[in-house]
Image (tube, rainbow, N blue to C red; front, top):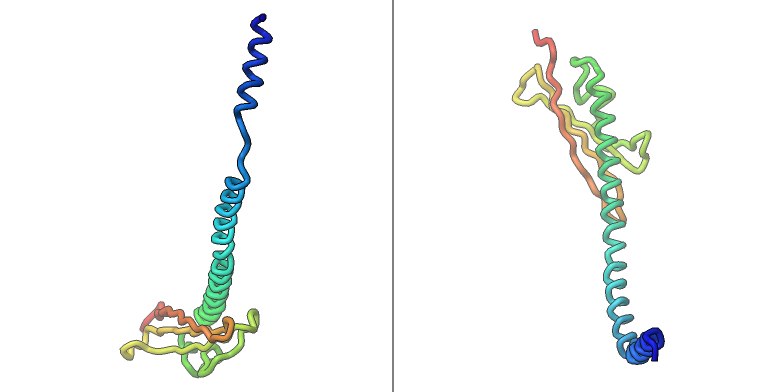
Length: 144
């Protein structure tokens, strides 16, 4: 025989010796794959919940920041609990009606040149009311 036909016969013998996967191996592989997919899919609701809470907290911070900027823009003498910016109770935000805020203004230690501003923001999440507080201090720039 020539060498070309010998090579072809050798290849045919090797291909006959190589077999495919058995049914049992295929079932085991599919089972392992299915368990892995189910484990990954079970984390989707947790990540969606975390993303929603993060969005809610970001919006709450935005509401508080807007309130604080309005208060900072006011004349220093007008920053009190009695002015139009500070309220005694929660008020719905104009931009985000699902969020309510309450502002308190204090003079720490009776210092007339400093105001502590606290903005509490609350909102509904599922069946719970969540609330966060944001604080800043505003000094009087020209005391005297």
